[in-house]
Image 1 (tube, one colour):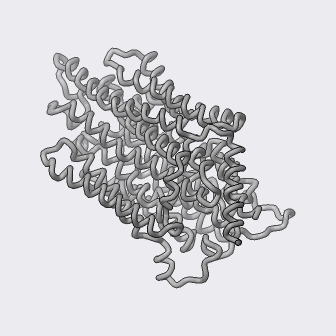
Image 2: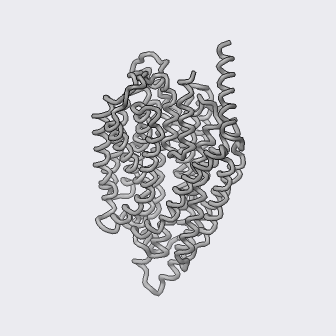
Image 3: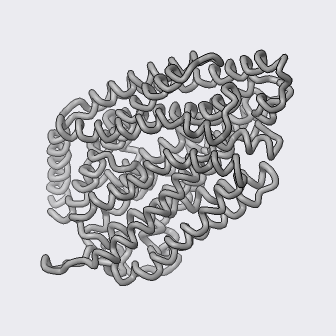
Length: 553
């Protein structure tokens, strides 16, 4: 019994320490493998150098994945100018997120049914190929498709990193591994925009994607060479009770139907939001209705499968599960809008270069990371998460409202202070939403809950990037130079003031989306369980014991 509970306790502890969301999510997926861990004697010491080398290589790969996601907002004006379209810029980020999120339901099961090493290598190759195609893209459509391919590979690498780490590391080294991976991912959000902006101003934006190749090659090489000798698991699938299976039986257990239905619903929703307000109202309505119908079919399909479902529908009857789920959805959506619009505001309204705009974005990103660390310590000490989540949403709401009122004459004290308020608020609350999801569930449901939480955050970002961009572009209207997002270079001085004012108004309109979303997070935070975490854990344990007892009878 103790061995079955250990992974869940490790997951909750890692989440309370502020581990990255992606790490927590996949850790949940692999918690089912605890029974297959080999029994090593206490005296056996792991090969520290080889372990550290393998984990470091995979952490570098995750750094590149996070870098790839964080650099796009800084490149938007440059990409819009090169591809001669601003209408598609929302897809540059959403296509990556869509592919990454849509693949999540199947990735954990794929890693469980097939070779972990081969699955990780294939994911890394897909990410590398997507990066090559991004760098070679000569049109907006090709770039969007390439971004989706890279997002698919990124999702597989993110999932695989935690699974491989769980396979090779002693449990006492889990926190160290999570801390290392988290540090690399967090640093990518800071240095990514700076490196990307500097490259865009100098050698060209294409090199932002070319640099992914050597890091991907390092990760592939280390996994192929070191993983087999370090693996502490037998060759059993992640479900230790499943018998030897044929290839057909393995594919049937992947439950791909639910994943395909969900992906179709999400994709139709994104197209519908993108087309909203266009010339074809019927097309937009058809896409949105079709998305709703597919989502309803997905829910019915998952309900029919009961506990075999990827996402058991009974989880959504738990208020303490739904509240932090919505909190992460709203806050991540607001964050995506802000960090998509702010770099563009700096480059269009303040006439900054891409590299300078990335530096000007640092106050909010640093505040976000500092707040995450402080909150991890505070929540662990007080054993409560709801007060922090409410406080974070309130502070972030104030910051978003202030960002909405930025004007062309705003000096550095304003745009720095407003960013710090917003970033600090998001840092306080966002990571704890995953802890709220996990502590609301029984131990056996944590893998499913973590996966749903990550997916909801990805969807929040993907959907509201489009909404914010739509509001932004509608305000720009038919501005002559709107397709380049570079008024400082293309507008004559006599008209520049009026044009900059229009761009500022467009940014302010787009920020309204972020304000509404972050305010919506406040009631969600209030609905989170206010009990002490240790009480929630004991209640969960009691539920598990009662269920075990009733099952045995």
